[in-house]
Amino acid sequence: GRCFCGTVRFQFDHDPVTVRACWCRDCQYLASGNASVNAMFRTEGFTCTGDLGVYVSNADSGSVMRRSFCPRCGTQLFSQSDRRPQFIVARVGTLDDPSIGRPLATIWTASAPSWAQLDKSLPCFDGQPPAPPA
Image 1 (tube, rainbow, N blue to C red):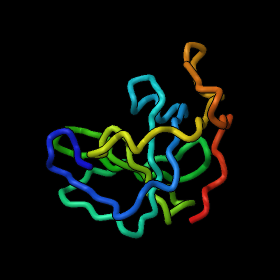
Image 2 (spheres, rainbow, N blue to C red):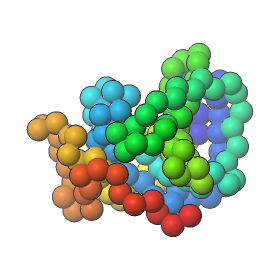
Image 3 (cartoon, rainbow, N blue to C red):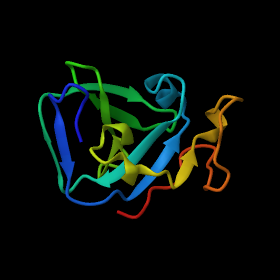
């Protein structure tokens, strides 16, 4: 994957562990008021080139989140939770092949606005679901 301007490039040597559409308020701020579709990968096998900006904040789940972005073009790239350091979450839109990012679940549905279109054929979680096996 890469950022919009191409300054930051990254690669995983494996498929995602899971992909989720997230309606938490943080993702809504980051994704212009919509859900963010995120692919969760194991950190092992991850490489990245280019300088990253990092924003550290506390999530509603209680986790400390490190959100990485391109300081040149501002593209939100990935995030990591202090509670799940074995995983890194990449924004599906930044992947070279975003078709691998079909959501398998919808999370933080309690924070979704009334107009949100939730796919009821997928598992839905009001908040943060359990971590997938590493």
